[in-house]
Image (tube, rainbow, N blue to C red; front, top):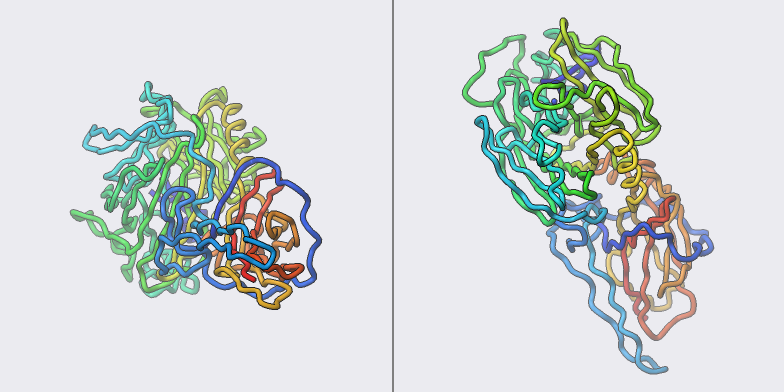
Length: 529
């Protein structure tokens, strides 16, 4: 079921609901950046934001910053080492290009996948490396997460798996098609037409789990993908009558209304207690949907039914968040800022619960609750994720779930976010460069991280030769990777001095180092004499 902010007419919640080479680590970068050059240009870089993920971290794809319809599966450039006048030149080989989305924390290990059928549902579980903890997705409810808890104790589940609208899942919206009587002609931002402030009359709203009739979304594929469990689904409109021109409410049919959108979710353990949750939305529609608040994802937590009751919402500092603003359908909500990019629902003693962290660095959240006599009993939370979905476009996001008491959740999530390295691309030069008589090389690209990366540096043969501020507007990048810290000013551009002409090939490398000392090689190119 979906939730609405009071009086907004816009759905905001879910109810009891390309680069090149990556070399990431949490070690400090060696050496100080070179002197800044004077040519940092504000010109746009070539290429779109990225290609669809090719699988495991480090998997090669067809170039950084290439359009999304480009073929994946490219490799590195060839080696160069022709002899010069002073003798044989060393062999220079640029590392293969990889999808920037593959620049991730390493997996903690793969504990295996197990499928269980119970209560008329088929659930697939990814085990932690030691099978101490499991995360489970319900295949007949669109791959939504219905279990996160201790493998040996089903009663430890921290997820509310009540119906197709709860769980941990994705749901997206369109402000021009927000309500049933005005969604059909995309007039909801200018029209006063309304059937009331209730989730039963929502407009365009593809929900991962399924619809209000409890029809589950269609599973396209599922299974092991590297160290991850991957599910791909086609969501359903929450309201089967979403595009009716009046306030008709039809009886539930035999099946739901599919949307021409695909949701892909991948789950990986990055520590024994923490699961990385990767989400990707791909449009197959001919219409674009403007930016608005989305559920990407929303976390519904257990309420004492089949698991512990987790009624205490805490921000990253341990501050208790009270949800008291009246919303739709007898629910209550509040918007709040957390001290860090994560929050946690806990039991009353703060000894057991779950945390949700956002890789984008988002610190603004919205929580919801319901309870007698006005509504069913539930609790949920989501980060403030604002974005649209262009026709044929793609949006990617990353979050983390941590299991345990508040102290454990805090240590785990703070530790994961501190180790998260930058990711990005070198757009230009797109390939190896023949220098000729040139004294410099134009470079451009982009870089993202949980914290905004202030600058990138250029190296030639391992020596720092220039630094460039990360301040070029890249709306194309932030459309695919919305809400990352610093958006849209996440691009870089400038001229790299090549120094004294050489008779041998040299290696240009672009490097990003974040505030925690994590280093990523964004890409390499061979400079030919």
